[in-house]
Length: 91
Image (cartoon, rainbow, N blue to C red; front, side, top):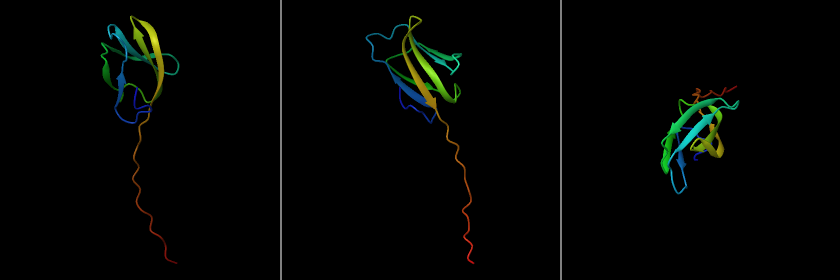
């Protein structure tokens, strides 16, 4: 999975397996609640995470419903704050 942490809407997942049949991703929050599932994975996948979660979640790779991999994923959104330049006082 890359990038991790991600600071945009997508992350990429490349699966190195002899077959991608019956593979799915399950996103769970830090207390273990399932928040999203992505089914029908291919060898190369781009997953949009903008509306799935903010912060930390865990991603499980499942084959036939059984976990075969587990990773932490961090989704960081940067808010740009514009500030006016300060004028220096000339005393």
